Image 1 (cartoon, rainbow, N blue to C red):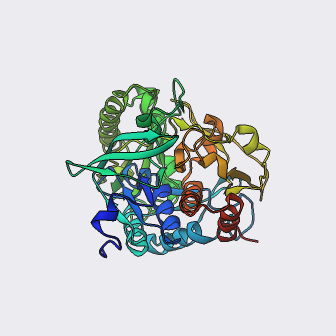
Image 2: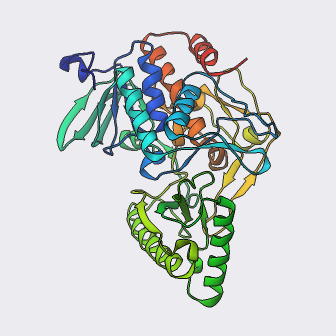
Length: 423
């Protein structure tokens, strides 16, 4: 990695401090850095990519319009589209045509990590992995100090602007700022990879998997709690496929729930693999090659912004003047133990994510992007996807630079729109 382009003395006074190196955090870093801002990015894991890599989501959704056209139509230009097109090449993949006009991009896990690394290096962002936020202090409605443990050493930052892309509202929580929390959230999922499967026909694999699961449940040999098992579309290549197990347990705000969920998910995967190896000929010689380190958490607490994205905004494809992202994915709501409920809007249409949904109502220099934007649970069921996270992250990076430079809000929004939205 290139040396940081600013010194140790300015390191603790970055223009922009980004918390979380997932899709939104990477995009925020790129967006802020291209304005010339001094950017520090903190990531709690030892790899970048957030849930896209740690939970191996497997597909990038939300980049394309829903339609029946033979050629995909991007809803976005600029950084998110460039990122996706590079990911296509690195993954040797292409947009996948799915049911009801949906399109998404299957990707390779390691390709996503590699691309995130490249973005950070090329943007000359100062990156710290294994960095855990510990303290946030406010004064005069601004965040003045942020403390982190980086490789078990305490480091204190005095940022100009903070962008929270953690997905967990961690900055607001530590700063004592109100957040929106539900008693329970959408169902989680555990992904895993199996190799040496005796087919490269995805339809054949999917039907065989469904028959095995149903037969196992009826005979009492397979747990009904593991019924929500599927092949991630477009993932079957060279007798290797990515599987997703929808977890039946509810998830709430108990900090110990994730540990229990993670342990039970890994146990369930081990049982599933053994069952398939012994009861399905396609898996006779198959092997488990990877279990994603994290369960896939779809939604959680949200920040309180200057405006709130609602279900009505999504379903009615509401357009706003300060749009910073175009949402094209349907509302995809997962209830534990059940198939997802999808609510669609019209073909070739989108809703706008307002810039004010990325701005804290309580702190002048706090922005957010990704899964913890200011939105209702139903709206976030659409806006949480990777494609939209790339858009909101990039926009937050530009908004942060604008705050540093005291630029007019309308001018910042116009700059973002010129970069992101095709004519």
